[in-house]
Length: 387
Ligand SMILES: Cc1ncc(COP(=O)(O)O)c(C=O)c1O
Ligand SMILES: C[C@@H](O)[C@H](N)C(=O)O
Image (tube, rainbow, N blue to C red):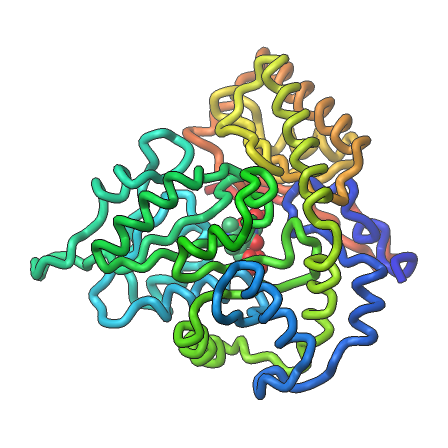
């Protein structure tokens, strides 16, 4: 199967742009061939229902809902928590639901977002929330905070369990719902050794991605209580997410979930930790701690040019996307060594030729792209977003 794919897409072993570039395994493909073929809108697809129940049970939640993307899962979760506008959602200023879901909260939920910059620079604390939330106290000028949407991990950073416990207690006291964008919650489980079920006890809903470090080709499972999931299903249909024979996708995701995923994620965390140590040894500044599978280079502080870094990556035939170096279980150790060379060369060049990024560089500012020509050859190029 993979020999029919253009070379660029035959493997993700050299792709450090994101853990979304993990590719399905032969075992997943085989599972898809044997998957159930019921209509999932009518909840008649056996493998889809099995996936939903499996993930919900792992999280200790009553029910789950398969969504074709993490974006859809987050958006319908937050919409389901929101009842009567005006209202607002409080989240980290870097949160995906705020920065990378195309203003879905404003358009689909008519919600205002209160983006919070954590005082500790890494993760939102209860003190950050208390200092920024909008109380529902009858003041007609405001849009009261009705949901706190956290992300664990966020930029690869693990929010400590004890902080989540404090936040949860305060949210309950104040009638505020707590959602988790769990695109990388599997990574948080491995790094913190906190079982997914314990996170499930703290959040009213969790969007659990299957398509990042777990390596499934697509999708997420939104988990919550039965009443919440029933209503979320309504919004999923409204947003066009009611898919039919999703058993093939569910079967592929179950291969990952029922397999040895912890060691795979631990491997990727080890690569990230090794790169972070290398950067520290060479004085290359990092934006945040490398708790899991991401290393965030502080390109701005290092005066490193993101486009040059991407080109240096292409020189070593690895794919980079700005200052975020994303590891996943399919990345080879050889790729790690090449990344070290590309990063160090870019850093050394910056010492003589400092790049002014006019402030913090964006995560997805420039990326290597493979254009496939008519003969199926890949043409290495980069795409730059001038924010
Ligand atoms: C933190 C986070 N949440 C949600 C998403 C959205 O997932 P999807 O790409 O499946 O829509 C992503 C990106 O993939 C992400 O990085
Ligand atoms: C691009 C962004 O949406 C994606 N979630 C990533 O982390 O790569």
